[in-house]
Image (tube, rainbow, N blue to C red; front, top):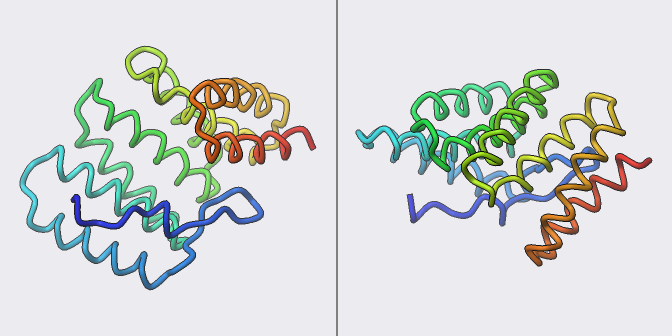
Length: 176
């Protein structure tokens, strides 16, 4: 999977704080590459990573139901307690949010947050960010702001300005 492009470089946030492809042809090509690798891959953990990558590409292309299905399949292959499983839960929550399944997105984000707090503290800010965005879409700005404020504090401590900007943007939306 190392030869696959980083999808984050092919995306931007839209007005609803959803990532969308900046170069659909490049994302389609990356999706085709990942699907070809998936067809050849016998290892469950590697298949889970490839499926999650496909799910992210599908989400960027606006194919949200397909993205949810790919992330669910990836989650089913992910090892219990693994970092990859928590990352996949976060990605599944985001796909569900984009698909309009806001209750499911909130539940999945809360599960990811519980896993992150328990086993993968480096992922707590990501879990909170996606929980906050799901709550924002669900019309719960106060709960969204609480999650995003915690995410912001963690991201400021990390010192990653791109993550801080992303959280501030969502927090500004939550505060209205």
